[in-house]
Image 1 (tube, rainbow, N blue to C red):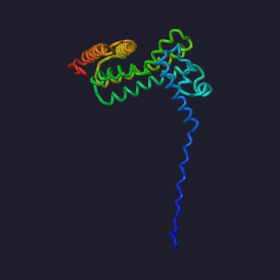
Image 2 (tube, rainbow, N blue to C red; image 1 turned 30 degrees about the horizontal axis):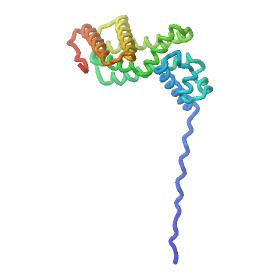
Image 3 (tube, one colour; image 1 turned 90 degrees about the horizontal axis):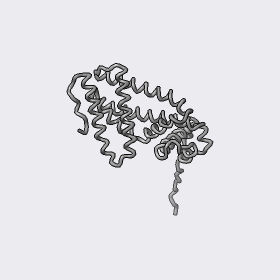
Image 4 (cartoon, rainbow, N blue to C red; image 1 turned 120 degrees about the vertical axis):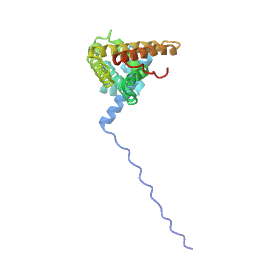
Length: 227
């Protein structure tokens, strides 16, 4: 009896893993370290956030850490840049949904959410540490000046697009006021037993901003979301 010939199929060769470039591996390591620095700053504060602690949290060797960030200040400045980029990303998404004066008022709600993010809290820790860390203060200043300048310019564009009459000095003043208020409230939020009580403060801030923009255009009040 003749048995049918069985054809054996050869299993396809496993795809070879794509080898990442040195630049890609370096970027991944850098991101992990910044992410860990944000976590540590948020949880332990500036003084306790050492490069050793960050390296351990990121599960990265001390040598690999130093290759990316030679000093703690280098790492802290990278966190500042990341924090600002996170803010830009959040604002860009919010601005795509509204227009005119409503867009400016909606921005405050987004800013309140952003102000309580871990990356924002990490920024506050670094910002306050400049008072006692001379090296950090010296290198932080130009980075922070650039961030503030860009923030004022973006707010100026928003107000002009909404037809709001405000010179550069006024735009800078209202931006500083809102940012300072939100930062202070965000820090209080971390210690407040009943955080919901702070929402009334945010509503007042929105009312003030609406009043300012309405006065400049002499329009009817904007209906604030959630009210």
